[in-house]
Amino acid sequence: MHPDLMLPLGDGARMGVEECQHHFQDQRWNCSTVNRDASLFGRVIQKGSREAAFVYAISSAGVVYAVTRACSRGTLLNCGCDPSRRGSGRDKGGVFDWGGCSDNVRYGSSFSRQFIDAKERRQRDGRALMNLHNNRAGRKAVKKFRTLQCKCHGVSGSCTVRTCWLAMQEFRLVAAHLKTRYNGATHVMMAQDGTALRVADRNHKRPTRSDLVYLEGSPDYCVQDSKLGSLGTEGRTCNKSSMGTDGCDIMCCGRGYHTRVVKQHYKCECKFHWCCFVHCKDCQQWVELHTCKGPRL
Image (cartoon, rainbow, N blue to C red; front, side, top):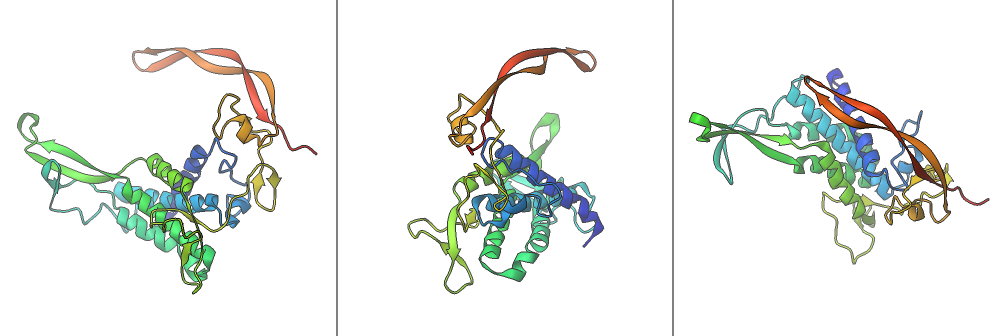
């Protein structure tokens, strides 16, 4: 292991957690982490559920993204810009010259595969195959969200010559894509020969390499359960007027909710002053806050 890779590995893990919590903040399972737990997400990922599938995919994607970004910045010893982007290329606008620094996603993916998949390749049981599939889906998601960026060269701004490079898009787009894959994840089971996964319901289509797969159904996450790693939704803030997953009916699992009026502080009447700062007043208002009731004893 190269010491210079420790920092991007940590960055990748952090990015995965932040995006997971952003996209699940209004759901019963809100991607909560567990302090002083080696697995970070606690017992939740021990079950082969949709949530575990997403955690593995977003974590794998985070490592790919962070390592690739470090390559482009020149902070790693064994990689730099994508060496395959040389010579000329072509797109809808015509011919262009490769230049700049194309993100070396190939190196980031290769490192992620070697580092993250190593443990799963030693196991080769159903759960290991599930994790390997979702790790790969995370890597492919980063590759999917790349865009061609170009700079024009020529007299008076004419675009007689273009120099282009391939760059990753923001990680939030990758995470949003994986969240849609979570919503449409495929239930799978171990094949009879024990070497692969197959669809549990033959009426469902076979998952692609970009899809997420899971082995077990998810708990409802309504009630705290240490065995499952569920923290429950008691005390969670809910939206009284929403019919979605953040609404009090769904979030509180039909148990009802408490309402209290609290004073909320916020910045208001902000003005920009040249140069260069913004001055705001401190304002406050009274708002209703709704929190889920606990289970009846």
